[in-house]
Length: 234
Image (cartoon, rainbow, N blue to C red; front, side, top):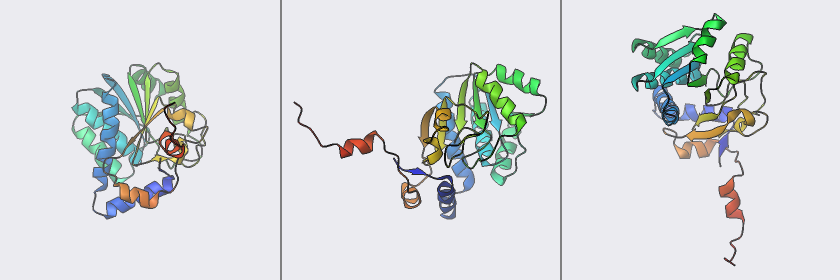
C-alpha cells in the first residue's frame, strides 16, 4: 500500500491545487469522508475540537455537514482560525447557526464533552511535532477517559505524521480518517496505537499525482499475497 511522508502529502495537495482544484473543494471532499464515517455510527450528539489550521478547517466543515444533517453538534475552538480555508469554513458553520465554544473554563468544556456520543479531534494535522500545550493536553486526557467514541481527523493530535512519535496526553482515537494516502506516522509506533482503525478517503486526490510524488509503501496483505507462489489445492 502506497503511503506518504507529511511533506510529500503537502506537495501532492499543492500540485492538485495548481492543476485547478480549489483548496476549499479538497477540504470539502476530505470532510465528507469523515462525515460518512460518523453517520455510520448513527449518533445524535457530537463535539468537534478544532484547531486554527487546515485540520481545524476540516473540523468546521465536518461540523457544518453534521449540523445540516440534523445532528446536535458544537465546536470547541482550541485555537483561533488562522488559515484562509479554516476562517472561511468557521464563518460558514457559524452563519448556519453553528455554535462555537471558546476554550477557556475547563469545567464548561468538560461538561459539554461529557454529554457527547462522539468527540472528533481536528486540532492538529500530520505536521505536528513537539509537545501539546497544557490546556489542550488536559482536554485530551479528559476525553480519553470518557466512555465516548473518539474519531481523529487525518491523525490523532499529538502524533507525528512523520515518524509516529507522540506527545504526552495525545488524543487516543478509536478510528482515524485520513485523506489521499495514509501517512508514515500512522504505521510507526508508538503513534500507531493511538490511531485505532484506519480509513483513507481518496475523493478529489488523483492517483497519478499521488503515485508520482509519494514513494514509501507498507507491506500489506495484498502485497504479500502477490509474493507467495500459487499452490495446488491439495
